[in-house]
Length: 280
Ligand code: DC
Image 1: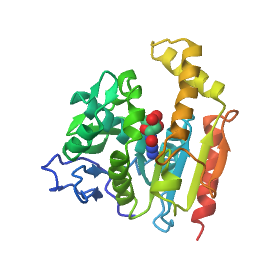
Image 2 (image 1 turned 180 degrees about the vertical axis):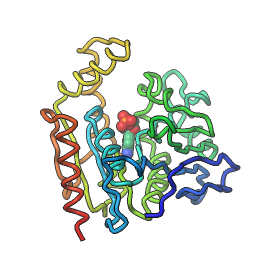
Image 3 (image 1 turned 90 degrees about the vertical axis):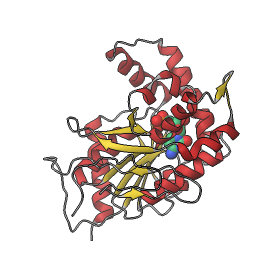
């Protein structure tokens, strides 16, 4: 499989991408551009094989249920591109915050729509960890977009039809050649309804809150378990009740409740499903 092993962005003027990786050309009025990132092909566990059928793997599910971990693991193992669609919504949210588009907590929707063409989201692969980093207009925002400020403002941004339309179009372009694992909320329903493998991941709210709690503890950012649980439930509600592309299990998606699975068990489960779908 002739895939670039090194991913980098070329923060050129919008519309003049020069990168050698698969790029998304801006469409219509939208000048956002994305350069795909790819996890390592030289992973010892890799089952990279040029004969492998190239499919689209869509992984959707509730927040904090470990979708990204399983999506990244699979992409690494099979030499596919991995895209975290949530990072794109987070990057647009940071862009809105930086442009003062939240006033008294309310999003200036028209303002964001007008400025959207100026926001350029790209991904690069961290050379040390092999993991993707999100860039906003050339600056690495990977850490910032995971912070509380972005997390607490992202919902209204993700609900905005203009934002969804622009990001959905780019995500679809990224999957044009297939050979991609993308995770999010609407990947199997709205972005790639024709994906060959769709998984809908969930776990009980308590289990997800516990995982988040442990993560924050480990980072030295302790928070009250009850607050985290409330936040998990709120996000579930918002994600599944918004008007545009709400979180839903696609009728043809496999349901994976990982409440009682280890990371290794879910990795094995997904790899088996992938092998079934790619058997020639
Ligand atoms: O997966 P995450 O928590 O990083 O996602 C951030 C936000 O973006 C969250 O509010 C859900 C939203 N999102 C979305 O609406 N559609 C996607 N495909 C991915 C994320």
